[in-house]
Length: 493
Image 1 (cartoon, helix red, strand yellow):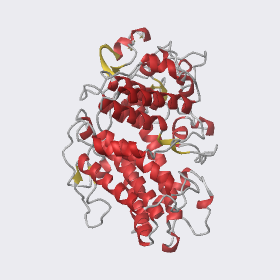
Image 2 (image 1 turned 135 degrees about the vertical axis):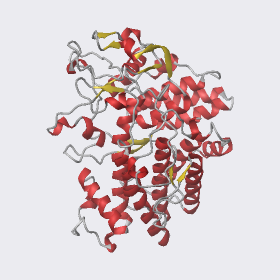
Image 3 (image 1 turned 60 degrees about the vertical axis):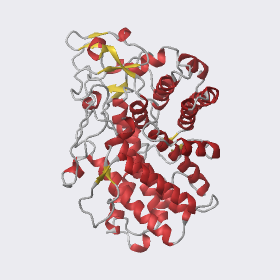
Image 4 (image 1 turned 120 degrees about the horizontal axis):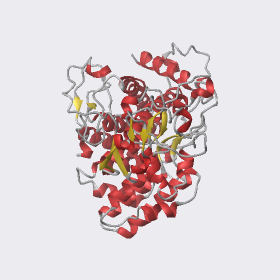
């Protein structure tokens, strides 16, 4: 069974990139032998599958759910996402990829590493496993965990999100307890040539994210305090960088998905949303130019969620702004700004406003540094943090920061913090009338979201979760009843 899982994994790895020479082998990659199955071969291929799911599909759909993106003129591929809709079918391939090509193969790597007391590789595989489960819980709320990756359970039970979060935190602690920073790690794309010290910092940042998500429903204050006091977090973004090529099949996965006209295709889908544009333009946020390109006239314009302007005579393709995507953009898992925002939130919750403001500033400055632009002071003044408004200040600034590189975490934090809020006055049809072709961007209220045109009728704010994936639900009699698009995952209740 291990050979079957590995064959499917390696084929996908070859399809997407040749990031390193680890795939240049003489053995037929479609039929690897047991001897070929080593962590040095398997870990990079697992990482590529994480990149494809997290850095492409989840980034794309979440960009629509957060109102970073709206739909390009005349095309309809993602119009349902723009209307806050997700079907059980749409996420099935990504769900399968994360379970089969990531989690199943991580299980094999962990078993090999444990047998050899290779604790650096064991930590790396465990950290990627925990990251993957965090993503699955944040998408679906409940997924198989305790009985998953176990052939004794062909229809594994679904576990609730709290159980999974507690379980993966215990897994991280167990792996961290075994490792030393000087331990070697199998070949990796995330940290080429690195030691376990890099993965320890990644694991700590991941723990901080998971614990902060839990903090609204469970007392984890002591655990967060211990992490912050230890202060062993990454000092640069945790990202897959320097491993993409300007060739079809080998570029950044998000670039390949929606900017691959560079390689002869013609389909475009994503444009800048008016909500993000209106908020960033209010105080001249220079990150806008880093995240999106101007239109053909050199201006910045924002589309409206729920429509693709397909019948308009005035607002054709050249009118809109596209993501400023490049073939070699990194796939960012956790950023330095993200880490500092979590720390700022911890201090704000505990009444230390001076420290909260210090890390809030650090977070916004890191965001501007990551974007390669200046102007952090204006952003801080636009949404100053104090003891009464920390959720709003952090929520809006995280929403802006993550819009340029990690829409999925933007969607998660939007659901958790509740900001930007859904406006009670302006709606999508106020901003654009499909019948009269009347466009009114001046009606948008900065720092808010708006109800899309033709919005999913089962949601009152934004989509709170994905329906259980068809690829699982159709085969698993233990799939629970779907609680509905408006039912928050456990940490957002």
